[in-house]
Structure formats: structure tokens, C-alpha cells
Length: 406
Picture (cartoon, rainbow, N blue to C red):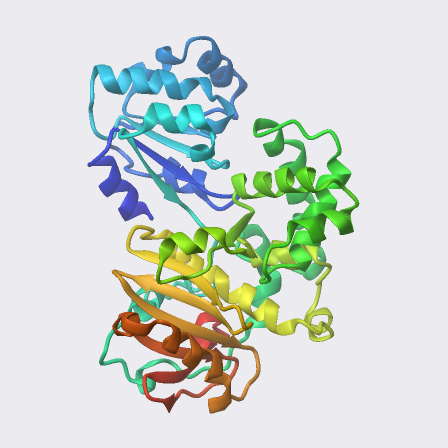
């Protein structure tokens, strides 16, 4: 991400690094381009915050400048627009925000054509252990000469990675009890601080219930009426709360894949949390034993894998995209990833064994593409075993072990 930031600063006047709270944005931008004369100003400093609200242009004399937690001062974006329009100089402003600033209409309008937005995700397991090859490994899935033998065959140690999540503090907690305390504090801070800058929430207990019920439904089709019923709140309120979770980068809604892209807009989306550890904690999962007792353990395996694939797409969102697929007969493919108009269909299985029957829905999906089958690079069953092999023509089984290193 540092390399992408540097390139973006050389090409655009404004670069905005967004992502959920505690994903590492401040660490990234504070240490970016040391010695290059870039000033750093945090709106967590009350003095700077007051100055930004009263006279934002006075802070621009330090340009090029980095403004941390920019969502706390929405007024500054119009001032940045005027500054850029007056003197357009690439790299003038680097901003961070824990809210999806693009959802703030006035901001999106004022910075259109002037800013580029980069999303910083929490750690995925391979990244945390410094496996820099993982993005290229996923890219290789699109190549025609990929051999199952070149993919690492390792036992996936995914349960503890699911519980740890991708926040540095939760990943390095000394014990499950320490991690429990950290997630408790994280949710409290999110509710009591971050939400204030997005919207006024009168009933925080109701919002917390929506968070919990949404976590219990991760990896499933999003049904807002069901969540509203279980939380005992009106459906429009639930709809608003889910939108706020998305604006705060807590959740993502995975769209359905369709050869005719306009059709995907009318289909239900799949709900995932951007940090698997937070989702597991909200759902009451505190130990591998809790997870083993869950009848939906396969869904949690999928949620854990989502962390890696979401990181992969976030690093190059124009060329890389992710979907799921489901037809009217209930056939479903867990993940469809796309790169440069080529697609890879992925069925996810948590079991340690795999059989050709596990690829049934992948074959149905391939058949549904019709004349578009030439876009399908291959189909994959990504599973909880440690061996790789060919299942059928253009369909292979791959171990998920390299995504959850031991």
C-alpha cells in the first residue's frame, strides 16, 4: 500500500486512504516519505481540530500535508477543493478516514477528478507472517499454465486465525482473555466515537444488537427483514444501521455475478465482515471449541478466507473484483473473482477431503456462462485438506493451507 500511495501522490493532488478503525492508516501515512518535507497533522489534536473548523486554509501553508482522521472535519474538503482548483499540484494533500468519505455526497462532489481513494484492509494471515507472494499466487489462478503441483499443499490452521482477526492488537494479544478485552474496547470506541461523526444514534443497544445479528449471518445472503425481526426494531432502522456499518468499513456486501451486469443490481448481496475476528467475537466465538460446536462451521471458514481475497481486491480494485453466484434453482458458487475480464470460480469447503461431487455447482456455473465460457480461466474447490489435484477438465482442488500458515 505504501508503494501505491507514493505513486498516487505523484499522479493526483489529493490521495485519500480509507478503511475501518485500527486497520493501520495512521501508521502508514505518518511514516510515508520521511524527510521529504511532508507535514503531518492529526485531527485527534483538539487544537488542530479547532483550527481546521475555524480557518482550514491556514493549515494549507504547510503543504504538502497529511491530514489524519479527516472525516472529523467535513468542512475541510470544500476548502481543499478550492485550494486544488487554485493551484493544482500533485501530492498536495494526503488524507485518512475511518468513514467511507465517498458516501458523503458533498465530499464526493467537491473532490471528483481531484482525488483517488485507496482502501487499507486489516491484515490477512499471509500478510501478517510476511508472505509477500500471496497476491501473485492468487493472480496465478488466472493463468492457463497453472499446475496444481505448484500450489502449496499445507494443512490450514484457520481456526485460530479466524479468532485473531486482522487487527494488529488482536493478533498479538497474549491470551484469548486479552483479545476479548480488546474487542470489547474496540466496539465501545466505535459506538461512542466513530458513529458520532457519521450519524446520530439514539439507541446504541439496538445498534449493538444489529451488529451481533449481522455477525451471526456472515457469509449468507443479506436479509434485512430477518435481522430487523430478531433485533426487534423497524426494518427502515435496520436498513440505516447496516448502511452505517458499511460506511464505517465494518461490513461488505458481496454482489452476485452475472454475465449481464445490470441484472446483478436486482439480486440480494452476500454479507461479510471486513475483520473475521470481530465477526467471530460478536457472534460469541471465543475459542476453537466454540467454533467446533457450530453447525455452520463451513460459513466461518468462508468468512476467514474472505479476509485474504478482500485484501487482494482492495490492492487493485479497478482490475480485481469479487462476487458470488446463485441461480434460480439454488445452485451457488461461493466466490467468483475477476481480473482483467477473466474469472475464476471458487467453491469453498472446510472439510479435509474433497471429491468430484464437490465441484457440482462449479460445473453448473460454467454451463450458465454460455458463450462467455471463454472468460472462465478455471474452477477451483478450495478446501481444508493438504493436497492438490485435478478433479475434472479445467477444475482443480487446492489446499487453503497457504492462506492460513501454521
